[in-house]
Image (tube, rainbow, N blue to C red):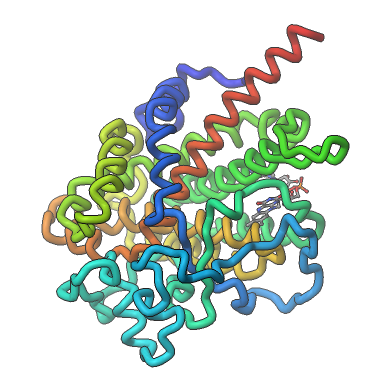
Length: 389
Ligand code: FAD
């Protein structure tokens, strides 16, 4: 409400807030169908991993809204989500190495695609902790059955998490380009924080009526009254959109199971064909004259953010925190670790995306898209209130 919609979303984005609103209105219905498809609605995660940053087992959120319903009725799922097909989940006979290989080629459980194998000796290009995808105690969750909304999680515990996430934004001194990297890191984290704030305000429990509904006051207090927070959601949208745009030509070559997934492929195409390369210019951030140390630092700090999710005491919040930090981590890997000159290398990075990274990527885009839709709805609510006041 308080920003100029014709201004650019950021120095590295040749797109205005208004243009992003227009793109988002166009792709919203198809994106929503995509994340509700059987392929994109399930996510695998380890809900019981020990927090490695501090020793604090107090303060678990016992509110019903904090809980996650895990999938238990396996026989009702499509064949490609059955435990034996998923490998790491219930197939105890797999060694860790086999499980890793099994998870690390795109859709290789879905299709017979054994030629794609991860090169474990290559450089680390991951921005997230991928351990969850092949941990034996990981559970499978239907994301659509566990909406991201108000859970009542808060107080000391969640503040501690947020401040430790923001504290990761302390790069080593005297690095060239540090400022741009710091700014991008801050915007990513703040945009995630603001997007969560938007969802919990948009899907909020009205304790008087018992209904889940938008809460304008809460939204204004958390997000709407801070134009920079709103702008950071748009910035994140631009970052993830560019990553999707960048991998689109290489998705076509992947062995999606055509028999089952023609519809999914066409939904992806219809979403991504509305995106444009100018939405975000990643080359401004880590260009050639910036030392690779800074990029390594950025990568390992972002990886810490993904690991901090294990310290979140509310299961539902942790689940969405993991989905979204994995989605951002995947975007960063695509944007900063794909050599744009080398076609083969590009295909190689995309081939090695796990299906969970891809699911996280599209669901993170959906979360941002939903946030932007909600921001526009809140703006209407705000204007209506002013007119009737
Ligand atoms: P907090 O949101 O905890 O913020 C702490 C401080 O950070 C604020 O005082 C402010 O100074 C600053 N700040 C706030 N927003 C921003 C921003 N966007 N950019 C920069 N600085 C900011 N709650 C739910 O109800 N549902 C959820 O699904 C959910 N998921 C969560 C996931 C994670 C990973 C975490 C850590 C928390 C989650 N929470 C969720 C809790 C929620 O984010 C808040 O922490 C909680 O509602 C308490 O809010 P608060 O107003 O005390 O301030």
